[in-house]
Length: 540
Image (cartoon, rainbow, N blue to C red; front, side):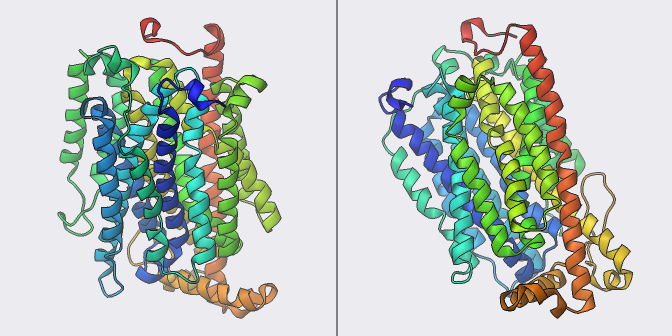
C-alpha cells in the first residue's frame, strides 16, 4: 500500500487518517454505549424497546447529518462541516451528562435520547466529509481505501469495548462515555488547515439536478419512507408524553422532499441499480449496526457481562484487521466487490444462527468470529460500488446511502431487535411461569411498526435479578443459579431464551441480502463483469 502514490493530492495521507480518526471517535462513543446499557436500564428502569429507541436515535440523526452534509459539502466546504461536527460531539456529551437519578424517567429518557441524537448528527456530518473525500482522493482503488477508512469504526469499537471491559468497575458510565472526546479533539487538530479536493462531479461542473438524476424518484422513495417513519414515531418535549408527530405532518414532510427531488431532476425515475443498492443498504444498516447495538448485551446475558465485553472487543478486532485486506481479496483472490458481499452475507447468516446456540465462551468465539468476518466488508464496499458505478452523483448518492443505512439501523434494526427480545422473552416467561410474568411485566406496552403490542419484562426487576446473579458468579460460577429464587431464575431463563430467538430472527436479513447479491453478480456477468465507470461513460 502506497498512499502517497495512490492519492491524487499531496496531503492524501493526512486526510485519510484524519477521516479515520473522525470515524474512530464515533466508534469509541458507540462501543462505550453498548457497555453502559445495563447501567441505563437499572438506574432509570427502561425496558429493551425504550433502550433500543434511545440507541436508535444515533442512527436516525446520522441520516440528517450525512444527507444534508452531502448536499452542501462541495458548496460550503468540508472545513465548515468538520467544525459543526466537532461542536455537535461536545454538545452531545453535555446533554447526556445532564441525566440524574432524581429526575423522572421521562426526563432522563429525553436527555439520553437527544444526547444520543446529537452524537449521531456529528457522526453523520463527518461521514458526509470522509466518504466522498476518500473516494475522490483514491479513484482507482475505492474499495481498498474506503475499507481502510472504515476500519476505524471497529477500531473505535475495540477501544470503546475495552473501556467498558477494564474500567466499568472504577469509572461511572458518564466518565467512560466522556473518553470519546479524546479522539474528537484529535480529528479536529488533524483536519485543521488542510485543503480538500471536491468530488469529480463537482469538478466537472454538474448541477445539483444532474447529480440527483441517478437518484431520482425511485431511490428517493426509500429515504422519504424512512423519514416518514422517523417523524411519525418521534416523541419530543414539544409533544405530550407518549404521543408523536401527527401522521399528516410526517407524511407531509416526506412528500415535500419527494416532490423537491422530482422537480430538480425533471421527474427522473432514477437508476434501477442504485435503487437496489439503496434497498440492500437499508438491510445492511439493520443487520450490522442494529445488531452491534445489542450484541454485547445479548452475549453478556447468555454468558456473563465480562465475557460479553471481551467478545465484543474480539469481533471488532477481527473487523479492524480484515478491513485492511480488501485489496488482497479483490486482486489476489479475484472476488469482485459484489462477490465479496455475497460471501459476507452468507457468513453473517451462518454466524448469527451459530451465535443463537452458544453455551460456552469458546463456542461463542467461534460463532461470533464467523459473524464478524461476514459483516466486515458490508458498509465500505457498498459505498465503493456506489462511487464506482455512479460518479455523476458526486457526494450525494454515497451520503444518501449512508443515511439510509444508519436510519434503517435506528428505526428498524435497534428498536426491532429490542422489540423482538421483549416479545420472545415475555412469551417465554409467560409460558414457563405465568404467575411470575403477571407480577414482572412492564406497565407500558412495547410496540414496533405493525406488530402486536407486548408487555415486556420490567427492566428494573430483570436488572435486579441479573445484578444478583453477577455477584453470585463472582463467588462461585458453577452454583450461581442456585442462589436465585424461583422467580429470579425464571426471569433469567426467559431473558436468555429471548436473546437466542432474536438472533435467529436477525439472521433472516443477511439471508435476504445474499439473494440480492447473487442476482447482482449474475447481472454484472451478463454485461461483461464488474468495473468502475467514468463520468463521460456513466451508464443510466
